Length: 260
Image 1: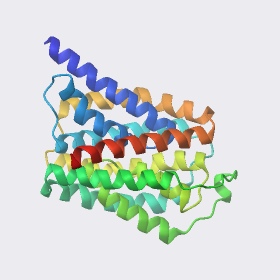
Image 2 (image 1 turned 135 degrees about the vertical axis):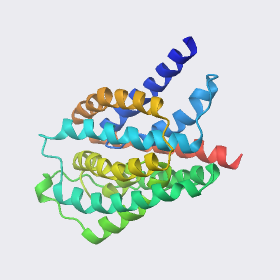
Image 3 (image 1 turned 180 degrees about the vertical axis):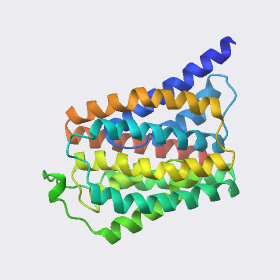
Image 4 (image 1 turned 90 degrees about the vertical axis):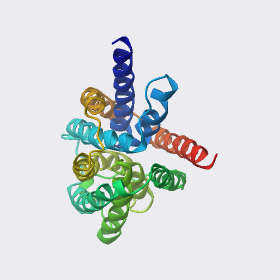
């Protein structure tokens, strides 16, 4: 029983830390929680989660983490409705395709897909860009590029249960030229839409261990709004740097394990 309590506490802390950071930088949090769930429980001597279980837990948890983040941004003026609509619908379709197809892949393939997404996002985060300070109503973007890129990201993210925000954020910043705070707020809403498809796919294919998922959900509902409030007060350059570091470290860890 004592081990069960420590196990539940470990899962809760992973969910809390990941969700707080996700609310802060506008991602669902799987970029952080995926490797933490994959490695920390086994390192502490608990039964290790499989890659399928980790992707299932991540998918369900992201759904609730993004709800908390969007709620915190609801009255800020940073939620871009048109951007959310075009990218949200496309990433939802992609995530449904990817999540239903994920049961056909081995764990090594799931980890490799995750690694490819992570290294792509890391490279994009270090592309120099000039910050534009405008309101969400003044922002123009290429709808075709936004929709196609979101569809591709959704398919890959659906496979790993990650919702794809860690890749959508660099796309919105560097390709679509969306200001940082609008990107963070809108990506949380887009990720929420994406996570609906991922969650349905993972649950229907039996890839979600219910108790760990429930613990992560509780942690998310507490932590994501806290992170979003902190993110609204932080300098945008610091927020971009935090995300770039998180994505880069995760990509390095995943590829180290895949290759060696």
